[in-house]
Image (cartoon, rainbow, N blue to C red; front, side, top):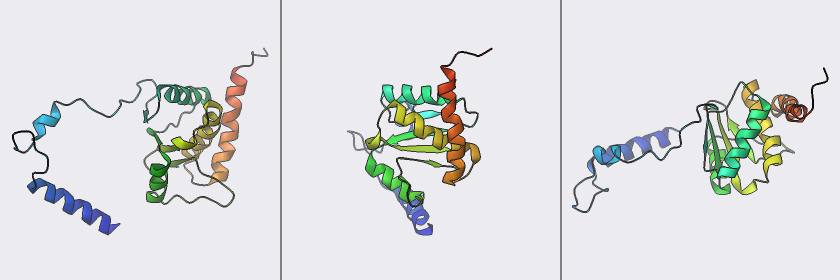
Length: 169
């Protein structure tokens, strides 16, 4: 970890003195040129309070609909749908431990409240609803234990089924 931080620090210091990014006049590009550029990061939804990255419009709509059906008070801040190779890199970087007998197509980084979804293993809206309930279980319990997350996820999965039923009273 110290090596990574040291390397990042050294690289940032060297970039101050190097003129690697230049425009057509071979002069260094200043911060004012980047300030005029539009932001590439999507804004969080005002109603939902979280941002979805790299999703198709259909995937994002399905994801937001599933989370709304669950009615969770504890929401992620960011959700990334990433290709398989990036998913594996993120899992390695965050030291993801997968218990024996479990597979991994999504994981939640609790300190940053970020959910990573392997987009190459995306199997539709029902699959997404099932597994996002599990990830929200991790957030609500603030626990890395699969049992704790699954206990809450079972409750969350009942809610969409109950939402379609008429009131008995």
